[in-house]
Image 1 (cartoon, rainbow, N blue to C red):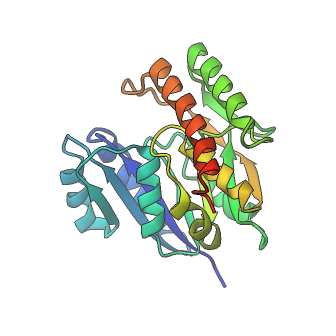
Image 2: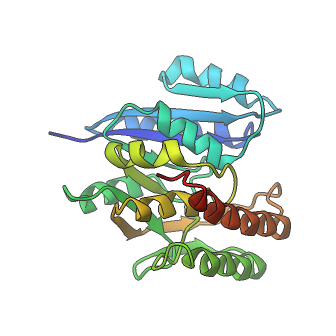
Amino acid sequence: MPHSFSIVIPVYNEEKRIPKNIDSICEFFSKVPERTEIIFVNDGSRDDTQKILENYKSKYGFKIVEYKKNTGKGYAVRQGALAASSDWVIFFDIDLATPLSEFEQLKLLMEPSDQIIIGSRRLSGSKVQRSESFLRIFLGQGFSKLSNLFVPGIPDFTCGFKCFSKEATVKIFPRARINRWAFDTELLYIARLKQIPIRQMPVSWAHDDDSRVRVLSDIVSSAKELLQIKINHWRGLYY
């Protein structure tokens, strides 16, 4: 029986990127043979993101999850996953840094035993077409090393392309608490606690500059969130 897929795309103040990429996204998934649903999660945008999404919804019929307060990408991803109704939940970023064609590679890779498959820019076979700045790379590697203290064996935590089975989604996402930058690490940390296997796949990736990302302050916030993961574990929130 073919799989069905929910495509979750978190957005925050993306009035410029949505018109650029939304047609490509919706038309791509309308042509795949599997049943798909697209879920845009508007994380409290203050620009015209919601208005633009509603205009395109009449054309493509996707779902919109929307709330007023900006809470963070982790929260947005979690709300999208919990609203999904398919066999698999897949996350894409609206900038399409990971190209849509990786969806086809994912399907070729999938095996019946898979529960989590995550994209990685740091495996043999990965193709980084436009790299980040030296500072971003340096700090990102530092964050990965810290995250490896929690979840060993994962070289890339923050690639925006991740795939969870319905079974894994139900076990992981209701327990997640981290709302912002360290949410990827938390999801994989809970997966390891639940003894859910994590499979990695090399992906193509092209960096898209986003001036809203404050590299140094966001790294500091991420480090605090990593500590919060351990506190949450001690408090028994992941069981």
